[in-house]
Every structure is written in C-alpha cells, then in structure tokens.
Image (cartoon, rainbow, N blue to C red; front, top):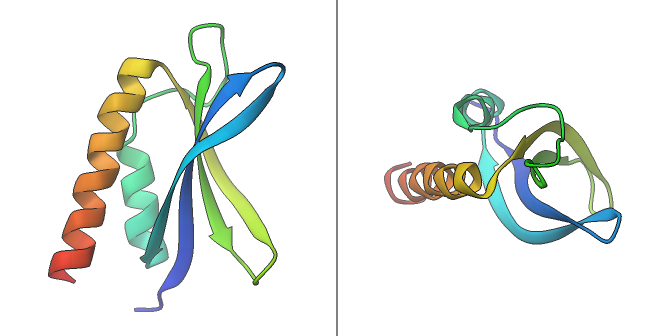
Length: 96
C-alpha cells in the first residue's frame, strides 16, 4: 500500500479571507484518507452559518501542496470532525 503525505487543514473565515488555525499531518494511503474525509460533517458550499473550512491537501513536493477536497462546517460540526480526525490519527499512529 503506497503511502503519501496528506494534510488536513482547519481554517476560519476572518476579514474577507480564510486563515489556517490548525493542521494535521496524515501520512497515510489515499483510500484511508478519503474514507476519513467522507466521515466528516458539513457541506461543500460555504454559508453564513458555515464559516469554518476543512481542507484535504496532498504534499506534492517540498514547496507545493494540492487541495484535493474541502468541506465547510459550523462550530459544532468542527468539534465532531476534530474528534473523528484525532481518533483516526491516534489509531493510525499507534496501531499501524
């Protein structure tokens, strides 16, 4: 199983742009990382109540990251999504 360097980036909308507030390094296979992203709560479209965004990025080279997927969520959804990400990361690090 080929492993790649993925990042999950948490962002919030502030002063007309998104700023990154957290990042998770996910050295994992493509299938597992997309299964994780499929579990996340939210919507693909931004709205007034969904001012938080989670991006899935692939680290192509030392200087380049490609955004693969994105989901917009509320604060409550972000809380649940963070739990999901932390659980999956813990399992991957400790049981892989």
